[in-house]
Length: 198
Ligand SMILES: [Zn+2]
Image (cartoon, rainbow, N blue to C red):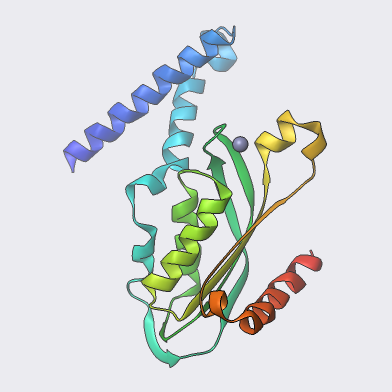
């Protein structure tokens, strides 16, 4: 436990040193009042934002409960906050997560933890979407999984005026939703109905 604590402290100090270096490189004075504690603050924020690197989010599905359930479960509007790995800038939005159980159900809060675990690492939205779908399919032994993520990317908003206000929508379908277009259309309609009312 102490070793783990030491490693965390060391990582935090490395981040803080790097942030101080960035501030110097952009022409700031890291020793002026407003910036004095910024390296440590950023180190704390990064440690939290990337905490998902040290866990396997699919483990949240291990418990689950056996209900003999076979009917669609769909959760809309789970909050997503992640960091794009190309610019290390945040992207945030919502995930809509559905699965077709094969006897085993996950708690709603467990589904949110799965999304959060994959989001708390340097990410691209496409991979995040696919990882959540794969985790549901395999972690629950579900017969199908379907995930839609809609998010606004700070790197798009800040760097390109022409993409300000746009939303990136990514989608992944597995199992029965990949194979059966009727099933897929039915679930997507439920998901899109939610999006249209926002
Ligand atoms: Zn980016």
